[in-house]
Image (tube, one colour):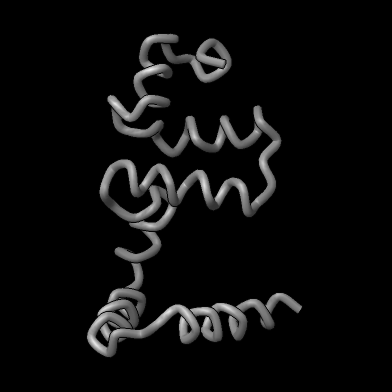
Amino acid sequence: MADMLSVSAPFLSDVEKGRRNSLDMDKLVLLKQILDLSDDEYQTMLNLAGKQRKTVAPDLPEYIMDRDYVSAALRTARDLDAGEAEWQRFVEELKKRKG
């Protein structure tokens, strides 16, 4: 696996054991391809990578930073203590746009 990701085996072992930060976004995309992860599995991996770094998932910072309205929405949700059910409704509404 380390060879396929172009990293050393000790480095990958350290990542797996939480002794090093998670892989960067390019390596995570490659890992998704190598492991043939579903979209849900890939999102879980990205979330875990962010949590391991004590930050948001690595696929999100640019999206958030490039859109002031996303930051405003997150702050509003935080200030109003939006719960999981409210976020789920919001996500379901967005998903309806897919068709």
